[in-house]
Length: 161
Image (cartoon, rainbow, N blue to C red; front, side, top):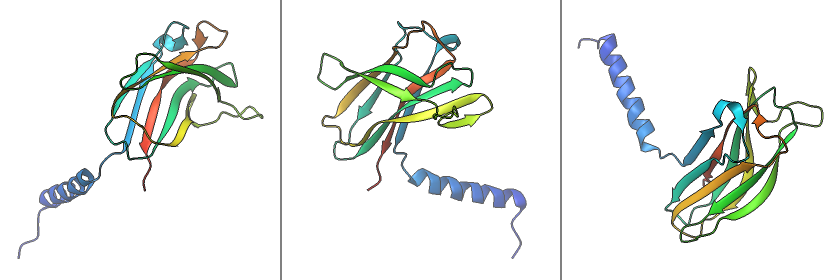
């Protein structure tokens, strides 16, 4: 029996790997909106929409935020507005994201001068309705624009049972 060529072996390994990976479902949704020129004005409200089809599953929801090390504050105040399927009015809640430890070190993961934080918004929640949900994020800090914020968004993870 003749040994397989390196190219054929590599092709078979790649095919096997892709077959295994494609069998797994991705139970995570993340969408981030770029803050133009890293200047978040009060009138700019990133809007993220997502669809829920499985109302029996349990989810964790996070606010995602990317900022530079030049961001001037230890925190960020936001209005988080949510609209459920069938509703006509957004439900608004004000929350504070803590971005620094008391000693001044940034919370989250950093690469060079860029920091990313995932702030838990809801944990172990079930969506009551199937359909399209909308989340709006609005910064409510005194600065207008708020400088050095790069992206803001939402991450949803299905909890494994």
